[in-house]
Amino acid sequence: MSLLKLEQVHVGYGGIKAVKGIDLEVNAGELVTLIGANGAGKTTTLKAIVGLLKPSEGRVMYDGNNIVGQPSHAIAAKGLVLVPEGRGVFPSLTIEENLQMGAYIRNDRDGIAADIEHKFSLFPRLKERAKQTAGTLSGGEQQMLAISRALMAKPKLLLLDEPSMGLAPIMVQKIFEVVRDVSKSGVTILLIEQNARLALQISQRGYVMDGGLITLAGESADLLSNPKVREAYLGEG
Amino acid sequence: MNAAGWTANPRNKWIGIACIAIALIALPFVLAMAGTAWVRITNFAILFVLLSLGLNIVVGFAGLLDLGYIAFYAVGAYVYALLASPHFGLHLPWWMILPIGAFVACIFGILLGSPTLKLRGDYLAIVTLGFGEIVRIFMNNLSDPINVTNGPKGISTIDSIKLAGLDFGGSTRIGDFVLSGTIKYYFFLLAILLIVIVINFRLQNSRIGRAWEAIREDEMAARAMGINTTRMKLLAFAMGASFGGIAGGMFSAIQGFISPESFVLNESVMVLAMVVLGGMGNIWGVVLGAVLLSFVPELLRYTVEPAQHALFGKQIIEAEVLRMLLFGLAMVLMMLYRPAGLLPSAVRKRELAKEEA
Image (cartoon, one colour):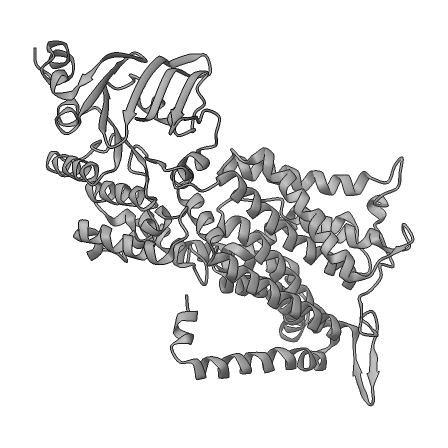
């Protein structure tokens, strides 16, 4: 069953249309990626899903309901949690406080404490620095914190906006491993990436976006071997 | 927070609290020996502490710069004055008016908050500054065609507070002991202050306080965490405004006379300076800032001019001039050596440390 379904979604900024009618589907348990060049409309699509932007047309169906027009905090409370582009951790709060903030919508004190411990066991690096401020972490560590914080909300669908952006290649590898592990643990993920190769390698299905439209869609393995994708997004010609 | 140090030894903590309580109870009687004026100055200092704590919610906790905060003080003061003076012939008791004043100020807070939700920093400062001025100008001009505020002439003979058979407007004689009205107000204000401080601490450590912190740090990330940023920002404006409204009501009752002149932009700036000097976001810091900026100018007034007469036989610098000079100097020194305030909040300190790094 599809957890998230975009039906002919159009989004614009003022007069400029950034997304021109796209269909996209994420089924429960899947890791789906949306790839495309800079300015293709990927982030705009994501913002429209979580209610930070309002689509001018179309429907965003989540768990069977149209969530267009709902405020973003209400959407987050439904389990649709975004890890914003550029990491978006709270730089002056400690790592522990960041994780607690992630659990803002939850009320189970014990469960939250246990979850924080669980995140620390996944990322020992974060535990070592639990009392340090998030701003002192390296880019990759901040991204791990951002993902951990989002997981604290127990999301049904995790939306990742370019988690590899601005990271050193070795860190990019690590982050993709983290994303794959999170997916294996049962969290449904929609991953937005410019790094098409890695994104397609870890995902089951993929969408290719260009000029505000979905130009290709299919199994990630097929897209990886698709000559058009290889030429345009994998740097092979 | 230094409270952690206290709780390490609960016995010391209680001894400390007892000492502070005794000092606060004895304070007005000691000050009264030096002259009732000092008790009155202390009362105004407490009013400013109340105002600073209210503004601290908006500026310190939620990170929304408000340059028109004095407007809420004005609203509270006018509500009290209109409901307890011969102006309309209404004489409601204080325990009805103070909550009404807080409520009306709260509405004004939301009124200011809702159109400015999308603004931050400089832009928000300009709009709030305008709001403060608009309220004052309204007070100044709402005397025609219907006389609501009595314009620049202000409202006089405002009722004093009456509690348990005591009229706070005058002295009470208990045997040989005379309790002046000013001292009675001191204890009344102290009680309100205690309640406000407790509320502030509860707020800071609550979900609401954490939500404000998140908004101050990164509004979009806060929304992604499921925080209703609109509601939380309005709540900050509303709560801050209510405290201002209560302080305003007390001001009316103590003074017995108010006019728009008491609510000029300079007062907003003064309250903001108290918050910044003490340490934005740190409750004790804000209290310290307000006490210092209320007392130091008065101390100067009572010492500088006599000292000059004694030394030079004439007055060379007026206390008022010296006050502004020292004020400027203090601000420059603060920015250089303690940019996060005298008692900085933990998070603010980290923010500044990060910028330097």
